[in-house]
Image (cartoon, rainbow, N blue to C red):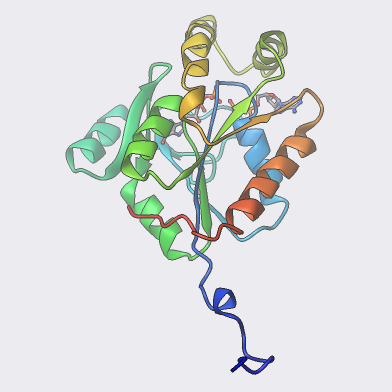
Length: 211
Ligand SMILES: Nc1nc2c(ncn2[C@@H]2O[C@H](COP(=O)(O)OP(=O)(O)O)[C@@H](O)[C@H]2O)c(=O)[nH]1
Ligand SMILES: Nc1ncnc2c1ncn2[C@@H]1O[C@H](COP(=O)(O)OP(=O)(O)O)[C@@H](O)[C@H]1O
């Protein structure tokens, strides 16, 4: 007996499972720029705002780029177990407030956040079904020039980022995807991340986020 042709097939009945997408990669590769471009695509994506005790850079907005807090406040949040994940990154605290990730996952949308490779490793351990995307430069020279041209660092903070990059590249094997953010081809990188999200939603066995 064949089901009536107008009856939805079983796979149309499964509610799409929201993804937890983790974008990582070396300083200056273009994570924030890619996320800003992704926001302009108006996809059903919830962008998690993470916390830091680093002072805001010119143009950075509290509650949008980061939740900017003092070192004392950050350490209070750690002690109060308010952080899902945190790390010292290039000398500053960075962390994912549990409240932020809960609010994001409750939205029913795909959730995306950008963390350093330490954060990506921690989120892989906490949530094996997260989708980890490594944003890479086309080559070290392009990466270095991009970081310098951003004019965001003091000699000390620049040196920390340069010293970190070799170690950060060794984390690649832990990731699910690598996207190259080529010089002056930003939209190509964004297209690839959109494609990853689309394909991840076509899995016969959807990733189930447990956090
Ligand atoms: N582990 C972790 N890293 C984070 C978090 N938020 C931001 N980061 C990362 O911290 C690193 C330093 O960020 P930032 O100080 O803005 O410097 P930038 O990477 O040079 O722009 C970047 O790789 C960010 O992706 C977080 O909540 N946890
Ligand atoms: N594809 C690209 N081509 C050229 N410049 C880029 C590209 N992506 C990002 N940038 C620039 O590189 C610098 C670093 O980007 P940013 O998003 O701050 O990196 P991250 O968030 O990974 O530290 C910024 O000045 C940004 O405008």
